[in-house]
Amino acid sequence: MALISLQNVSKTYPPARKGEPAVTALRDINLEIEAGEIFGIIGYSGAGKSTLVRLINALESSTSGDITVDGRQVSGVPERKLRTLRLDIGMIFQQFNLFNSKTVRNNIAYPLRVAGRSTAEIAARVEELLDFVGLADKAGSYPEQLSGGQKQRVGIARALAASPKILLADEATSALDPETTHEVLALLRRVNRELGITIVVITHEMDVIKNLATRVAVMDGGRIVEQGEVFEVFSNPRQASSRKFVSTVVRGVPSPDELDSLRRRHPGRIVTLSFRDGDSSQSEVFLELARAGIGFELVYGGINDISGRAFGHLTLALTGEDAAIDGALAAVGHGLKVAERF
Ligand SMILES: Nc1ncnc2c1ncn2[C@@H]1O[C@H](COP(=O)(O)OP(=O)(O)OP(=O)(O)O)[C@@H](O)[C@H]1O
Image (cartoon, rainbow, N blue to C red; front, side, top):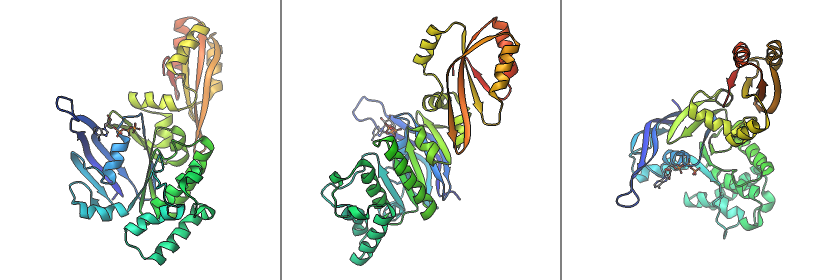
């Protein structure tokens, strides 16, 4: 059985004031996250990602549907039972949520004190965690004396203190610069590999998913519109709404504004081709266009790499007879996607 399982889960917030509409944040969510995996949840702001996380760690209850974590029911369970469940789930946040008046050591010790562990046990566990996150020399510092990356490492150590099975990371690197983001992602990979902790990572950043997750769910308007292996979902999104989202986060697809500007600057038809590793070669495309007597210029493009597999997009300005262009695109279309507008 999956470690985290959601079946037909919906969540509606009642209206904030009389006369206002209720907000349905999640609609019929079905999701299975297996023990030991790093699962990404990605989507625009307002898609329902944070609500989903709050349901998994039982900070809120669902309106309908079933949620189980490690075989235990989460929905409709008394608060007393939820406390033990929450010990199995650590959480890290975009703004770190550290206690500014406590030292690094005391921040990490906090959940253990709340859980009533002995002083000796707490001291040993905190030392272990400080070593694990590489902050042994900062034990006596206060959060304001730390960089963003160091603060998040304290956040991770604190989340791990009670030895959870699951770590929920809600936009955990969104406040960090790209280099620090990579350090924190490397630490999260170690948390997964060395400690065997299942990680659920919520983000709007493709880089985070592609560097960390093995599977991903794309959310839009409270629904999961697509889920699967990260390479598959990003290189070949099947639903219109996930295609739209993916095109904003992958390299090489012109935005609508860029497309307008390309159209103004180049004569002919602007066509975007997407390639996937092993599907078809770019030279076949160029050969076919040349054979059909079509003029072409490469005007935009980019290649993405996910777990050593490449996919990319090339945008060409094509000049020639419409029928000849359509024929050539149909001929090369086998194994690659052709879009006048991605
Ligand atoms: N406590 C609440 N009361 C009422 N509506 C809420 C509440 N929390 C979230 N919502 C609404 O639910 C929808 C989903 O919000 P949610 O925060 O889960 O999205 P998100 O994908 O995490 O976005 P972001 O990345 O901006 O946090 C939004 O329309 C939001 O306004």
